[in-house]
Amino acid sequence: MEIRELTNDHNQEIHDLNVYAFRLEDNEETKKWVEDCFANGIAYGAFSEEKLTSSVIVFPFEMYYHGRILKMGGIGNVSSYPEVRGQGTIRQLLEKALEEMRDQGYVLSYLAPFSYRFYRKFGYKVAFEQRQYQIMPEDFGPFEAPENRVERVRYEDQKQTIQSIYQQKVAQSVGPVRRTDWLWEKKFLPSDKKKVALYRDDQDSPKGYLVFEFTGQDQNTFKIHELMALSGTAERSLWDFVSTHSSSFESFTYTGRSDQHLTHLFSEADLKQTMMSHMMARIVDMEDFLKQCPFQASQQQEFWIEVRDVTAEWNNNVFKLSVSEHEVSVTIEEQPGNESRHLKGSIQTWTQLFMQFKTADELQFEGSLAASKETAQALQDILPKGVPELYDYF
Image (cartoon, rainbow, N blue to C red):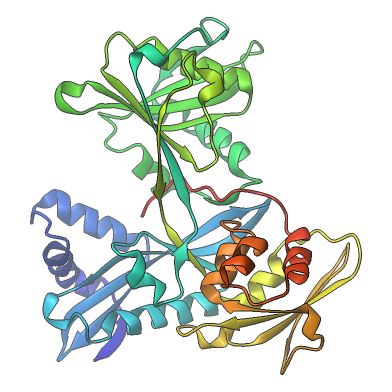
């Protein structure tokens, strides 16, 4: 088995593999989708006797992390022919992808799993959840929103405005993707189905947008793909716009971040809510990530962070983390210098902690993080507060 970076010479083989592995229709639409994915990423393939048997793609993305921009490699199009499954080719491909990401300065990686258990073997763990609402027409009530502040627009005419609102909304968050032109295009395709509404305040300044679509049998479901508001008034106004459709649809669906509560907006608080696991993540380079993490310490703090990583061996170290109000220092040590400040966990555990999917106290309680309760809390205290959120899928 040989692992290589794929080129345009492999386009037909890539197409055939994706069609077979994902049971896609072999048509022009599928061909365009496959070509589009591989044109926007770096692909690696496993070859057996010069035949492409498995492939994976790394999308070169960036993500927002408490006001900072970190490099993130999005994993997609993980595919294999059935006859080679179970032979370790996906492990070899992911190891190659992680090595390349590390060499290029990527500190995190995301993927959408077909099986959460399968990808945990490679250091990934659930890092995002979503809260899905199903809203009935009778749930709507007065939103106390200003009149005539929302209008339907074409994305092509307002793309810079919409992109600016998104960036302002998520720049201080934990995990959202800094969208490329390609991701924005994906968000609004097919353009003949996706609809957009824009809110402007009384100074005519854009403060929120809504992306929606009519779906379901007889198009009787109003599906909200994205709602971004920079103020409470903008939020109420956009929901008021949605409510004007209540007599025309049987139900409304909306998916937001895990801690997003909407009951304050509705006259009836008995909204049907479903929590769903979303995408997985892993830290690619622990040392580099620690150096870029915006710790918040008012006085000198030291921790010895020990990492177990069965896929990315360069993370298998004890990292001494020294944090003060103005400086972060990370060094690799042979052993902890202070056992009372020693914390130990797998790369999955550290990913969930630093992505703020779970707290240090929760991880210590469940046994994933080996540390005293006091030390776990001390580390938690210097982490910026936030909730992981992600609005893209690849």
